[in-house]
Image (cartoon, rainbow over all chains, first blue to last red; front, side, top):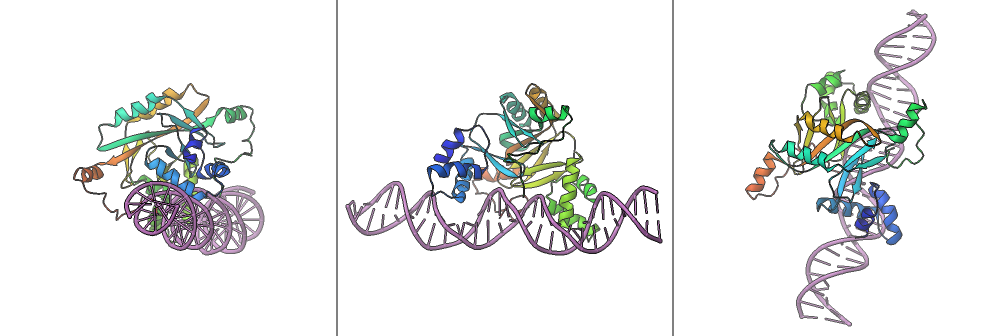
Length: 136
Length: 136
DNA sequence: CTCTTATTGATAATTATTATTAATAGATAT
DNA sequence: ATATCTATTAATAATAATTATCAATAAGAG
């Protein structure tokens, strides 16, 4: 409940760990494994969407048809609300011997901020907030 | 070279490890890390596409605009060749303050085989060939 | 043929995610 | 209320995919 509530209250696309860090303020005893378990159940039940971006799972409680943009430079994830895109894709696919239950549309490119940098001939900014970029 | 060659010769969407297992027949000294390194370079150079499906990276040397279907039951990945889908998506997105360099369209659902099973009221088959499904 | 630079092999490290299991909480019946 | 059954959690270990490191090798320039 708290997990779903939090996801709904937010327009970012947090990882399990990010969710964990917030929810544990409310439920201090909660553990990361529990967050993972619930996020997976929620996504299996179709209450949330599980995305795979930059080598990690991201979660989104917005169940309306929308799309995502991922900046190749800073890793930021932006929402796009053009349900026609998803609808068009689903319409076109009907023919095949595959029954789709949903589409995920992800645009890869550069966000505004990173484009401005490029015009000024600056090399990509060192990302301070590296949430969203996988580092091992 | 051998890695790219192999990827081009195949219509599956192999993981790094799958590529490794094939390429090492030609170059027995090659190591998995080298395969990863080269696959990542190739994808950064736009020679191949790096997909994220079921928690692992998949690689595809087909650079034509096409889409993918992922079966939720058996994990199989199928190609869809409807470049209009990608084109439509890219056209619609122009407006936003994000400069896309490409789109990835992934349909999730059930493939023919798994659908037949469903009609016969059989529970999902135990997947013998679990390549394509992440298991930890 | 030597020197310089880039790539590889071998291997260790990292880390995101899942599995395990005993303990706890919730629900139900008594 | 209390006992009983079931589902969920916390704590923690395990797994496995991917990346980092670095000495050794290969490739290319002069």
